[in-house]
Image 1 (cartoon, one colour):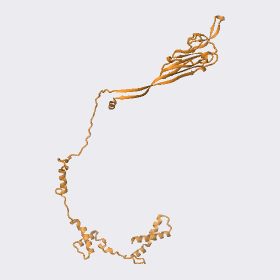
Image 2 (tube, rainbow, N blue to C red; image 1 turned 90 degrees about the vertical axis):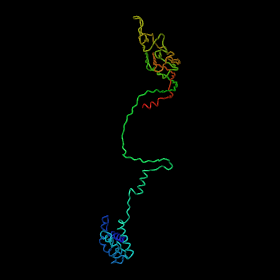
Image 3 (cartoon, rainbow, N blue to C red; image 1 turned 135 degrees about the vertical axis):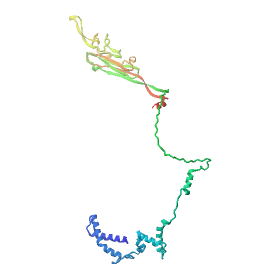
Image 4 (cartoon, rainbow, N blue to C red; image 1 turned 60 degrees about the horizontal axis):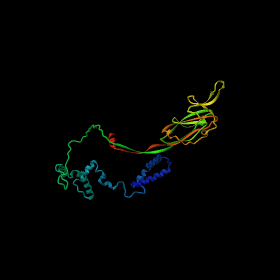
Length: 357
């Protein structure tokens, strides 16, 4: 019945809301509130059945269920206590009233009259049996002796922090550590090739000290080309190894082309000569028309005995007459050197080395 009334009220409220201008939730709430205030009287008359044509069947002013338990009030407060007294040892004339009193008697008397059970730790079988099991656990089935025992701890467990110091003494132990090297030989081809002719002006001489680094032990080195215009020399590590000079020339290193007065008094003349670094004259210096060394040659001269491993000093001397010409030398050879191809270490001290860390 309540559901029917609610739906009717909502339908009417919806029609009222449609008739008004509702734009906010507050407007809708106020519209529903106004409708409830204006229509609650008419709705109540229809529910009670006093007016209107749509009366609710079997519904009057007072529901017949209100006759039971005096409206439900006899079980509350002091009235409930009266109901309890009235039902004590009471035999009702009909079954419904008798059921009512049976329910009242059950609720009021059961807590006081139901049997009470006393559990005594000295006599209760469950407690005495468990205590006996703890004191005498018995033996494992199939074993000849008792396998279980009861451990009783009288004092609680405690934690103790203890420290200690450990020291070691020094000891001397001998061990072997071997090393095996796999060494190979590599033959390296090397060359030395220079041309300094453009640096020698006409009627002058220049000395060029240079370095030739040989990587490894010399195997075979040769002068494969030589050219000096007009005259020149090649020195290796302080030894003269090749030259093209005029007769009577000595060590031309750091020498010079200069003029020298020849004769006695007014009957003398000046001539061009070549003088050594110490001022000694080697005689007349002139253009001989480009000799074999001026034109260039390939002597293939073996100079291995003059070459050493590492740095080698190559000194090239050139003396030029009329025109600037070449002043070059080329050396080619091979050197052998040992290289480490691999190694094998037999370390029998590894265990001791780990212990020493």
